[in-house]
Amino acid sequence: MRKKIVAGNWKMNNDLAETKSLINGIQNEIENLELDNTRVIVSPSYVNLSLALELTSANKIEVASQNMHQAKSGAFTGEVSADMLKSVGIKSVIIGHSERRQYFNETDALLAEKMNTVLANELEAIFCFGELLEDRKSGNHFKVVESQLQNALFHLEAKDFSSIVLAYEPVWAIGTGETASPEQAQEMHAFIRKTLAEKYNQEVADSVSILYGGSVKPANAEEIFSKEDVDGGLIGGASLKPADFAAIIKAI
Ligand SMILES: O=C[C@H](O)COP(=O)(O)O
Image 1: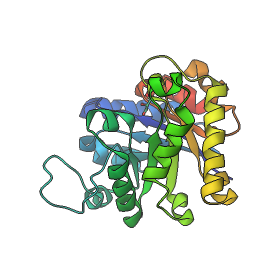
Image 2 (image 1 turned 60 degrees about the horizontal axis):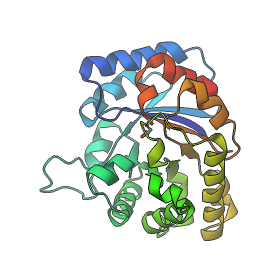
Image 3 (image 1 turned 90 degrees about the vertical axis):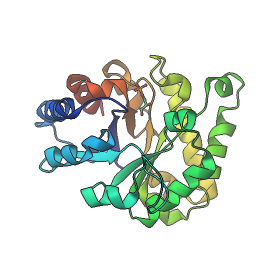
Image 4 (image 1 turned 45 degrees about the vertical axis):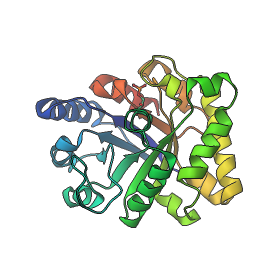
């Protein structure tokens, strides 16, 4: 049975004290919850990963990095490698978030390299992808998503998908307050699963968790998560408030 996942992407928010307070707040909110077959992940900035790992070591919360460089080491000022992440205890990395694609020019080709590095290091990738508003308006959203998967993931082998979580995030719904309707999310998630079944096999398609991201809030989470092919969410803004994030976890 594939896992349900609620992951909070904190983006460039929270200093040291705020990180501590947010993790403690979330922990307090969810400590009595039975998290059957459900993973809760938070993703603070690089500088707060060690603190977050320390604070979560005895509880139900996992910690992921928001990014990672593809090279092993070297003259890449400002970057962080897989070895560095592993050395502090990180096991999961968000790859290909639309903000990385948009503001840091991360292309599908680069993301394919990052995926190779993630897998070579026995890390887990939370791989993000999704269409722009103009793709949706022109009816090209399926084609765009298929090509993102093709270019960054489909050089991988079927077995690699046991270390991959997919996060469909339509760019027009990120931080805008405009959510894809539960039907739009389901339609795309079913398409992604069908594409995986055609490219690999039904087992891969059925076992990969596919998260939805884009303005998920306590008010809409339950309906989105009720859809058959939606296995959870990658949450931005609402993951910064313990009560909201906890409500989204409860919705799953
Ligand atoms: O990684 C998370 C997504 O970018 C969603 O962000 P949001 O929930 O603020 O729309």
